[in-house]
Image (cartoon, rainbow, N blue to C red):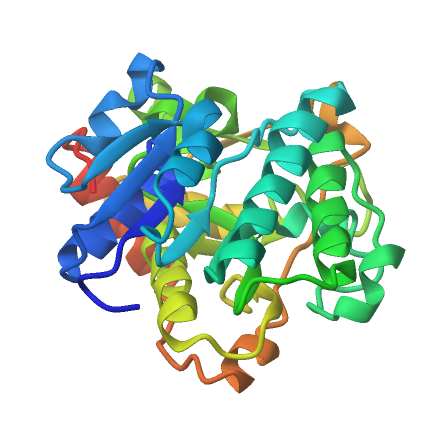
Length: 326
């Protein structure tokens, strides 16, 4: 990937997509084609002051590609329906599976490198661990239609005889950071916790419904969005062995740790109220996630990850308190 290359980014107005645009701009990349549904007014500010060539509506992108042959040098496919509470599989088959297959086929036919977003949700309850072992994909048990669609695409990709010259499916773990104001219920715990503290002086965390975990000691691999976009960019630049890669930090932290980091960022003592996990997500709720990051490290990625404390502090002070964007 060179600075005069033309790079397409799907989901460009969204959380991770807009942060990738910002990161690429900071790194000197401006020949960007942004793909999304730009009619959603809550996302408009995510792209303010960003530099790019064109915006293309997601429904017209494949037609645009056919009409502009040999123009794209790489695609970051980050666009997807990500709401884990939607139960209708058909929505995900259209927006996640079918659309992703069309992009894969276009990249394969036109010799274009592809980096796409998979998800750690594919690991389900984690009973088989969190190793990005491609031979185990079919044995994973995702716990909602969104996660099923992501795992189905990973499996489909590996089965294809025609592939892009380089491709990587990145299993994003719990991503947090700027530009997620529009995400509503699906925004990160940090975003919701900060707003709860501002409104009520305390944070509400889910009570544990399993005896082996104390309240608030459920654990996640939280990764700062600026680390995620660095990994995306490194993948496209370095193009190691194609395949599925975990994208986390490799260190699980508790929600209590998270609450402490937020309160410390706003210089207040920690106050937590534990509430029941909503019944509509209780059965599918993960109590522990931690990315095995050996594969990415073995591929040559050696940039240190942002600590939870440092990432939360920057997110709160530089972005949430200022209502600012990356």
